[in-house]
Length: 350
Ligand SMILES: [Zn+2]
Image (cartoon, rainbow, N blue to C red):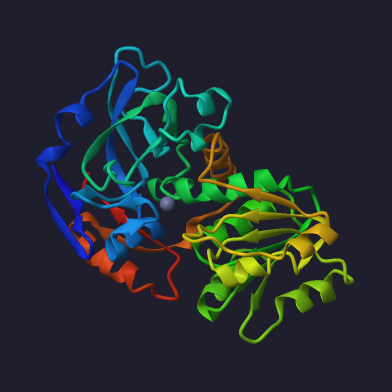
């Protein structure tokens, strides 16, 4: 099967990949076989390409990239009851051990044994077909496109973050960072009931996209504007009920409590490869609640439901689409991080 293979750091090729066959392609009784349609390019895919590793996960052997996917069911295992051939679906890329302690406690995303697409040594899905458990494959309503469905994976991070924040109707939130995850977090916070979301970034192009998503989003360019002063001024000096940290920048993380209201909640979303410091005193005087998220759990059906109803519209975030034949080029473009792009996707031949 022709696949997009990360051979090693800085080297991609589109080639046959016989290594994937057998075990990984065997259809178990509760599995489905999916023909891939659309795959989003994630920051993590690009990071493996440009750095060859993310923290402890190192690319030591050729690996297929991609984990944000939608497609069509082409075969079902003998015991599958909820899906049938021809169903349009999106897939949750992390498969936990069903018997692990974390899974039994409902926290399957933090199961140390979770197998997650395109996290070495597990292959991703920039390939024609894959086999996936029925339990982590979700049927799409007719009015949700394959492109939107491939956005469910990043959207799930924002929805999980808003869930952890326990948003109340009328809350004011700050989202630090206007990258794809910052923007899906802003949309999720609004869908959860926030009255206003301040989105901060250094890039005008990204902030323009943020502002275009909703009248309830206020962009703040921290090159020219002081985020804390803006939030304080517009909340009568009280601050924001929730601050979402979606930059992964140690400098931003060091300031997460400054715009926060007393009794507020900070949600740490951005990955931090190294230990960072933050102002524990500022957290203390606010009795701040701090939440951390790792990917997501139990939110894919909710995301699909919100796309179907129009409660969340991710279409403005999909800024470029490449054909599968052009996918090496797509990654080169993604690695150059064009300021005006949010999510780039690859379409596989059908
Ligand atoms: Zn992703």
